[in-house]
Length: 299
Image 1 (cartoon, helix red, strand yellow):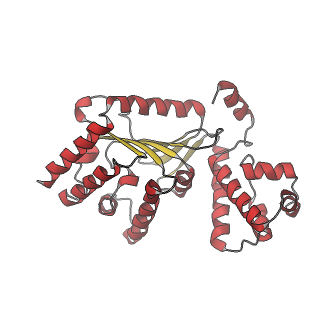
Image 2 (cartoon, rainbow, N blue to C red):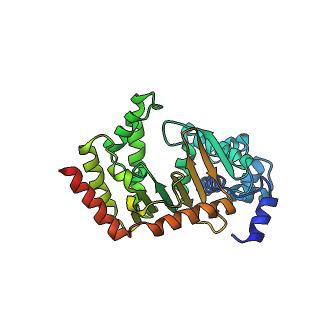
Image 3 (cartoon, rainbow, N blue to C red):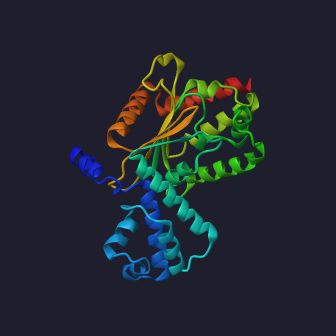
């Protein structure tokens, strides 16, 4: 996005098109079309002009819960789960607008729901990991070992749900419109004995499989690379298909989750990632490196 575009966006205040806002708008547009309603008919039930309804369905303005409920009723959508999901999207979207590009929330034992929505809307992810295998590449056994080691995961009865959700997310790697992933991992993530040798042997074998996918680019930063640009900690950068969409950076710390959705900060994370990728082994070299570590672990 150029400087003038950034300036115009900042001047809009809350009237900006956020990722979650666009996702909510697309869902409401889909439901309206399925119900055979025109913009005029939909606008009439919530006392909105055609222009305002277009902005709602494009994600340019925040939506009120009463309007969503009325529109759902008008569209014949009565499933509490569907309505609840739309209301949750609207709530998260309003919170993101208040944050004006920054989102900070309390650490949770599982992936925060807003990340799941954003990942689902994204077409590509760049991810840097220092100590863990990227989540979309993890085996169920590795994830269970990680949950057992994480002291903040008090309710281990939820582990089956956590694993099922992670496996569902991984389906996008093989879908008709697959998620494009460029991941860079530090050598430590491959050698950390999460769950023991058997679990790691299976996990490394899984990595040997995913590197063959055309939508996956996986690189390893070896110990011998020394100091690197991303030594500060792991992060992810989500990219979206719309021309007006900014990349979104996601940083998880021991105490908080930080979302960054503005041009300047996003560019700084992209620069860090690119420089670290340049210092890493090529995808072909990384595949051999991973396979060698797998063989060492099997001994």
